[in-house]
Length: 111
Image (cartoon, rainbow, N blue to C red):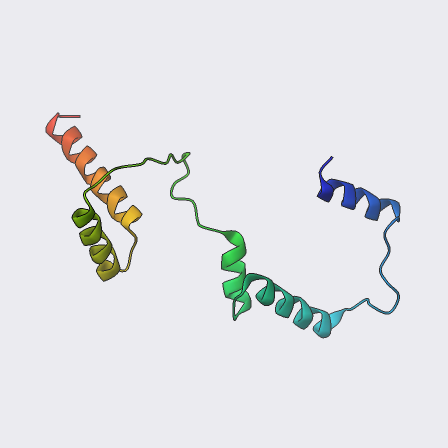
């Protein structure tokens, strides 16, 4: 049983109860929760905290794979500069280049 599952079971059984006088509700509770969320995620707004907690969005509905590619240092430096100039990542540049290469090859093969 995971720690979370065990904790949930203890709460359901009534083994764990709130400390008297610490229950919060209404606007004060919402404000405290927002503040806690922002502090825990090192963000300045609740919206930014939610983005951190959600993590990166999926690239596609299909499962994604990770590949490693060796490239000469000068090429990587150029890719980093290009990515920064375009406001994207090197990973996105590589995905786009691979997608274009595969589409071009399939088109040339008549597929």
